Amino acid sequence: MSRPICVECRVEYSCEKNEVLVNDPAVGGFPATYWYADRWECPGCKHQVIVGRGKQMLGKEEDNSFEFNHNLPVEEDG
Image 1 (spheres, rainbow, N blue to C red):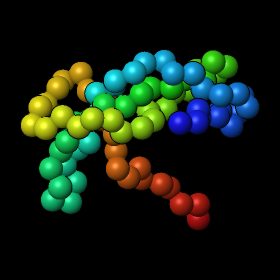
Image 2: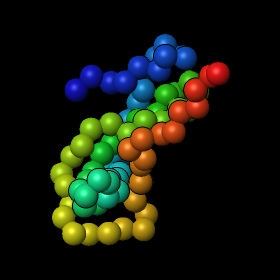
Image 3: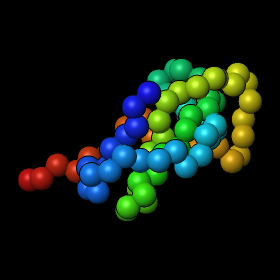
Image 4: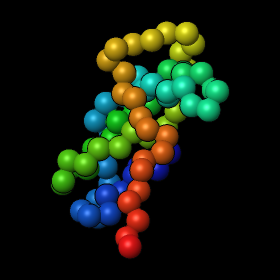
């Protein structure tokens, strides 16, 4: 796998933590799922990204998981 590159700093991210538990919330009739990914960080500006989808955990809910938004509302100019 190739490393993400920070657009701002123009350097490769480094893996900050493996096996971050991610909560894929229920959307459009699909049930919530939990899976593992890696958290990468830019050594310059400290921006972080979640990369990869590893093994899935079925039927387990965790309070300390990272939950993401499927769609981020975007404001249009006008």
